[in-house]
Amino acid sequence: MNIEFLGAARTVTGSMHLLQINGSRVLLDCGLFQGKRAEANDRNKNFPFDPKMIDAVILSHAHIDHSGNLPNLVKQGFAGTIYSTPATRDLCGIMLADSGHLHEKDAEYLNKKLRKNHEQPVEPLYTVEDAARAMKLFAGIPYEKEFNAGENISVKFTDAGHILGSASIKVTAKEEGITKHFGFSGDIGRWNMPIIRDPSHMGQVESLITESTYGGIEHDPPEDMENQLVDDLERTINRGGKILVPAFSVGRTQDLVYSLHKLFDKGRLPRIPIYIDSPLAINATEIFKKHPECFDEETFRHIGEHHDPFGFKRLQYVRTAEESKRLNDKKEPCMIIAASGMCEAGRILHHLANNIGDPRNTIMIVGYCAEHTLGKRLVEQAEEVNILGSAYKREAEVIVHNSFSAHADHNELLKYINRFDKQALQNIFVVHGEIERSTNLQNALIQTGFRGLRIPSRGENITI
Image (cartoon, rainbow, N blue to C red; front, side, top):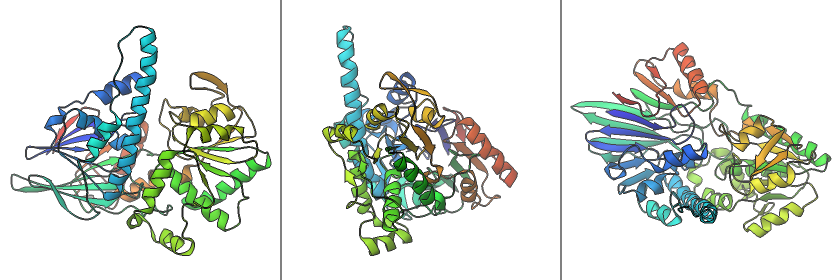
């Protein structure tokens, strides 16, 4: 078995690892790299292999940094099967189409400038049509059901507890009469979070690729969510401000809406207008309703009692750009939840531009923000930021809610990995984290008694 680490190595985006087993070439994830524009364009456009030579893709979950380059893979000749859970397949159906639309619009905007300078036009990385072609290659496989992904290659998904449909992946391969067990954590979720189930154990393996996004960092406990929300909303409402929430359309938005819904029911929050200004989040919420097999017991009970876990009767879902623009005219306190979570694109940019200079307002960060993003600048409490090409002085309060994170923190990563037999697990490859985070997790695992720890570089090739 040969592993080549091609993405999310010493960084958190662009997840992609190539397995070569018994002559089959299997790709684990095919995500978009998100970072500085020139580097991102180059890495996303040019695969370090021939897509026609890939036999199958095994996808951990639908987030764009794990699935977002699949349409480009298909565009460049991949014709195999993309294996995922059914919920991941359905989420990718809307997310990849949305991503294709954004790439088309980006190219259209850039080409207007290029034409003025009499320069050659550019093509989008991929289109909505490319995304539709990719979706035809998906096969939805339920959790815990083994399937074949190549000669003597058996695969099983287990619930990673990260977002709807997220999976850890166990590969069992027989090579030259020897059976090998290999694991890929995907993105590991947290225990006791709203809506979805806790992470499951995939079973014992000899080699493991694990994420390390929050190595060395502890989140606030999930049970603190509601109290923190109440405090922050009341403080902002009392000073007559708005609450702006840059939210990932899949996972974080639904968690936040679910928590707000419970607080309304308990009478702990004043009735203010809450707007979900993200067509993708609206469509994703509809898909959540179709996959109750991913829900935890608490959510099942809540549905039985209230029949409205995502607050459709109390929230206002904004679909059109015109409706979104009208939100800027609102003077009374309200909450606006809009994509994207890292503030790199989407409607949240316009809301920030219109509201960041008002000290009555609050910007609530509820998810991870990578380096070199506007979201990261806000997390760092920057006094001045660039939005849509213009500089803005930040007067609004910025608060960060790590309790809403869908990623396991340091202790939860250790909890997940400590389920593995230290004697049987011979190799642990630490990926999907900035080098400091990966190093923190590596050191903690060594102290715990694990061996064979390694933080691979991008392009590193290892034979097991």
